[in-house]
Length: 360
Image (cartoon, rainbow, N blue to C red; front, top):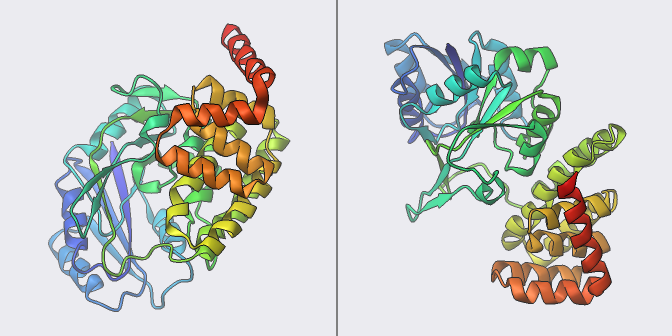
């Protein structure tokens, strides 16, 4: 089995050697590391060039000018250059532990899946705090072993490309690539395309990927406009799923959307929160209200149901209350709010529908 690792880089001279060496020492014998440097203004490219002289499996592609948006264009350039059986991505300030890619490749081959998705640990560059993946709560109940899943279920998981390994043939056959535009969050539409085009996927519950956050100079989302840059893509994927009448995929997608709204709101101003809420409301209005609500009940997730109901109704005041209560993890208070909002008949109807779904 062979592996291509694509590393888009920009001004990460302090960390890129660790990223590259972690792949070299990972244990895969047949590999290539493709670093696409997006016109760094520091010595990032020089560091990579020195390493490539020591190891001809390290390939440096230097772009003459910085490309617009995030890492979409460099990632696509890297994809065009891959020659191996499997493809993975690595942020240039992150690293992997030994065996991380090998394990996923082995499981992919064993279960004949199009892509794998793993857990990860975020490392705060300022405090050195280890932060677990925020979506581990929505993984299937048996979290301790590898398992095949409906790829649409991955729509409910965070979309980072670096937590996955892909079959090269699958990406080529489906013509999948990152959007190229002057915006960030290009991970989102790529992730959604992968999930909706794949025939099979596998969960690998290892945490061998370490993602650096909160570092100086990190290219990240800094404003509400950048947070909303993925919204046109999300409307597009929602319309595509509706044309297919794929209710399950819509429910997984909405599940991610609701959880994402809870995560990003703490980083926004009041004005930006209202802008984001309006955008999410537009998306949720197009959702299958009954099906999404039932999915939340089926998974016993009253937090997500409460958030979805408030977004769907366009009730910003109720939404802020939902965020406050879900942060406090006050399930009893949330259930009281739901009872008040839906009434006992509505609650009974949802519970009955949940029972009926389990009997199908």
